[in-house]
Image (tube, rainbow, N blue to C red; front, side, top):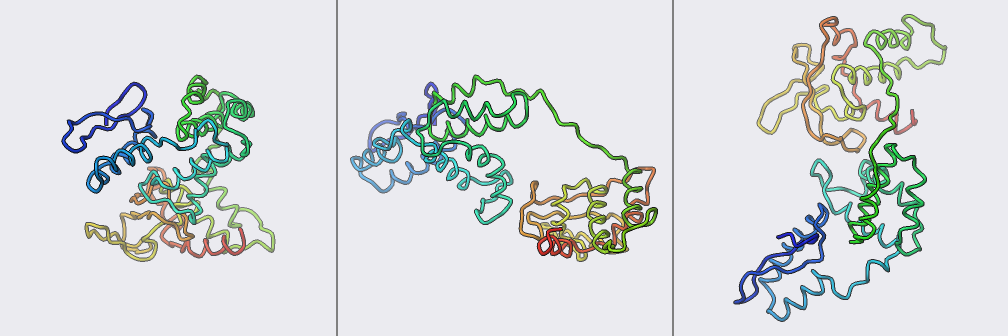
Length: 317
């Protein structure tokens, strides 16, 4: 592949001709590079199985896409469908094949693209005015403003509308407003935990202590290991050892002889969703002031998060 102004050209030879560059209808962008690589692989296969005349007819039709519907006549609905196909055909950030039946992948589509595209007039042709109206619904300087412009840039790149992409590139998406993040000290967490368990506060007669203990164990795992909440449901060695690919055995968390207390976080949770960082191993973070934090929070009781998952699925708790 080679850059040719703002486009990408493929380099190859046909028959006895010398190696030369040929346009492939791909822009010089990250998306364009991915598409050009896919087309290069198709060209390599076609060169093995077609005559020179057949090849150039195929090249014009499939690679240069001559005769295809002009992209400035596409409706927003057509354009969104192209972006959606592109999304599902690409691997996730963890290099996993996306699955339309996976709730994590569906959520990723909706949060990154779907929530913005749903506000576009799907039956209208792709023009600038509806795009500008959509952007104006968000406060400039906010994180959502960044995201909506990013989603629209993706749409413009996929349908090769450089005119729209240039307009979007001129928009300043620098984030200037930020949410105030809540913080809590370890001491505050411990006090709150005692109140929730009824140790330092009275509870309602209908309070379900067993459910509270399950959730507090999950929150305590976040505190000790710095986990996202969904990662608690992906721990592989709660009550049985885990053997890594290189045959290293990591003991079960509830093993009383296990003093390292490493945990293995898998790619999938016990309720079928996927983790953000895929497979990894985490160790406890124990502050010097609380060397007994594992015991204090009853981490090694290793309550099965499958039980907590079942409760979420059946009661919506």
